[in-house]
Amino acid sequence: MTEKLKVIISGGGTGGHIFPAVSIANEIRAKRPDAQILFVGAEGRMEMQRVPAAGYEIKGLPIAGFDRKRLWRNIPVLFKIMKSRAMARRIVEEFQPQVAVGVGGYASGPTLNVCESMGIPTLIQEQNSYAGVTNKLLARHASCICVAYDGMERFFPADKLVFTGNPVRQNLLDETLSKDDAIRALGLVPGKRTVLVVGGSLGARTLNESMLGNLPLLRQQRSVQFVWQTGKYYSEEIAAELERRGKPANLVVTDFIADMRQAYAAADLVISRAGAGSISEFCLLGKPVILVPSPNVAEDHQTKNALALVQKEAALYVSDADARRTLLPLAVNTVTDHDKLETLAHNVKQLAKPHAAADIADRVIALAEAGR
Image 1 (cartoon, rainbow, N blue to C red):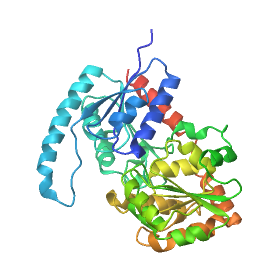
Image 2 (image 1 turned 90 degrees about the vertical axis):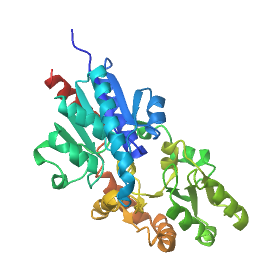
Image 3 (image 1 turned 135 degrees about the horizontal axis):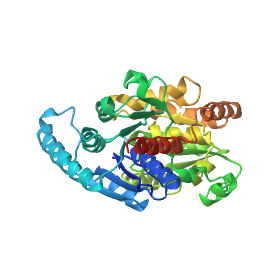
């Protein structure tokens, strides 16, 4: 009788870590319905809600990241790391996984470190073009490192690298939803070009200020309409400002888009931050995009993500500092330029790795079976 497959998946902190982790878990379960999968995340972070909602058990660690700007604040962090490592050891000893997967974020550090010390094979999934600190530290003892960008031997041992791409939310691939149906569902006008502005679930101040600062330009557009996700953090402030200034008729505003499949289907052009997960979705869907990298991320990795696409003429780029002035004029010019949209769509589609989650799942299962 075949031994039941037991896998730990650790990491999180942002949707860019959680969505790939859940996609990998879903593929493992599809290939091995007997698999027991346990997630380990950081207490108080979004994985503690998102993972159970996806149907998986998760345990939380009291882990926190280092404050690189205010070093004196890191003394409590050291104690949290020590406590998290002890808790991770108990979790691993009780669950007894055959393999562990790290998807990045500081929550994966203690769990994979413990697994490596116990001889349990580990697989790292690095989403970005510039490797995260946790993954770089874990890479030395990892069995396999799955990446989504060229040139990652700068950070990791070349003989461990596998180019798989990034897993994405599987429901985005539903081809039964037509563009016209998506347009109507969002309260938009069929026949107009549509720009989707999305800054993540919490929003992005720069994108929001770029929209507010260009309301007159939006009003002038007769053939273009806009869907603007403000993020819940900014929604009340923006609603009050639009009440004062008047909301353009060709603008749909929402604090959160629950169905991104629908929003992407409606959009001719997307304005977005440059998180690795989002970029992988644009590649998979062949969606023209203007990337505005967040400056508030480690090692400025979003700019590196964006430029990796720009160099292949697969996306447009606007710096955070220039966005308030140049972003919306560029968006209007781009979305009304059919040839430019076609070029961007074609080039970004060439970078897609539609089987990323399945390929990673195969590697995870192989590592588990090889270690028996």
